[in-house]
Amino acid sequence: MIYALIGLVLVGSIVFYLTSCKNKSATSSQSETNQNIDTEKVRETKVQENMYPELRNKSLTVTADELNLKLDSNKTIVYGAVMDWDIGQAIATVVSFQTGDASLYISAGQIYIGGYAHENVRNAGLAFVNESQNYLSKAKATKNTSLPDKGCVRFYFLTNKGKFTFQETVENITSKNSDWTPLFNLGNNIITEYRTTTDK
Image (cartoon, rainbow, N blue to C red; front, side, top):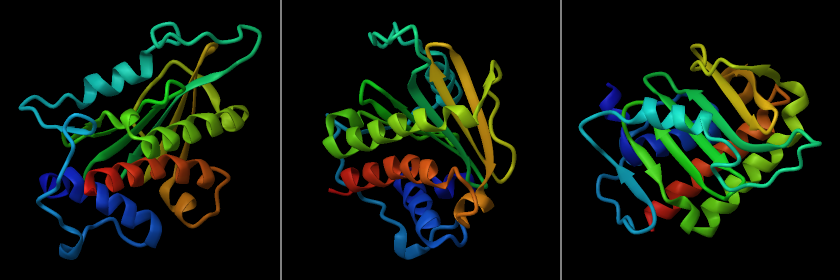
């Protein structure tokens, strides 16, 4: 069943899930098997070895210096935001940095990178990471980078003072009973913009 959710079919179902707040399964009308993708800009990478664990770990451990970001040491500044979303048969991980780079990793093995070359994806990524600064006070410091519990979304904030995290249930987020719904919507918008870009 995992492979039934791969590629842009899965991305489409993720967007549909948020907008409908119903189930997470994609219908046949949402399936698009032939996509025109500009491989010089947005790339869906499929390799025999699943690179998801390695790429997710790298995203959660990259430093501001490695990104060539100069941050005010007198403040705690979010330079990267990661959203792990349990969508049932897989985890969708949205990654964004202050550099404007935004990516989507799916635990089934699909990797979407190169969105920074598209203004819509870049702007969506920057909106997500910038808004994360306003949620920092609600999160707690952590050294653990575990995946979310079943039926949950876990946020990670990378700062010049360490990592912070918070977990919320998908049910609370999609029913708009959570303070974290607006931030989730911004993270999900990166998926939406990737889909818009690859649909062209």
